[in-house]
Length: 314
Ligand code: 13P
Ligand code: SF4
Image (cartoon, rainbow, N blue to C red; front, side, top):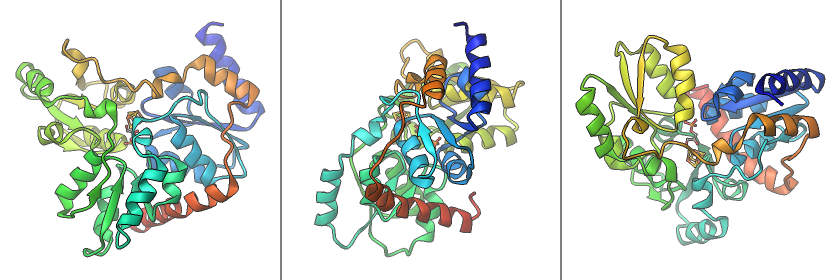
């Protein structure tokens, strides 16, 4: 089937089945165009909580689809490719975190949303890159915190809040591999370019960034900025929305540098138009989870969403 035929079939199936397509900014252009909502992890969790559609087709990675199911268990949630994992999730097995937590009984656990439902169930509160700073600042200053699983995001939050959270030693392999020296080489060619980076990048990379924020944060920053050129240090899928919203601005990536072609998330890119069509048609693969696990994992996610509302983030 051609892309045009696939798109027509997806649109009509979506109407017929009262389905909603939630897509992350790292999805391919065709999937972003077909999505009813595109957003960062926080906005997508909020959409998943609020939707009244019968089926949520989650075009992102598995932990995001699981979060949607946990927040709205009455809905059927499908994911085009069940192998769409996340290196951060994989870097934090729940049994190892449970052991670490038991060794630090005076600490609460704050987990980045990029983790398994089992890790969420062990956590006191969840955060995303879009709300981590404000949530941490709203917690009592003397509260001891274990932060899992992203040592880069946790280290960045420590550096801007003066906290001393204990960091789990996990990384996003996509962002952690992005090298500051490649950005500096690009800066030599484009000295006026503004460097914007996702906080999953390593500390050396973040040190050369002019702006650090979530995918949505970066989009907001670019819209308001008077700058014309941006070096974008995150997954390349976001370039579609950046260019769509800012047709007169120029976006450069580390792929402009022959040394580095590391800006694609293989997990995010497992989803394709064909798989999206097939999962909507067959309502499979479906996210099926144990009720007790969902109930335990929901508590810290709801806490995050409630705090995000109180703090005016969503
Ligand atoms: P955002 O919440 O900023 O969209 O990040 C999700 C993610 O997986 C980044 O790698
Ligand atoms: Fe996970 Fe990194 Fe892919 Fe985001 S880019 S989904 S953190 S592996």
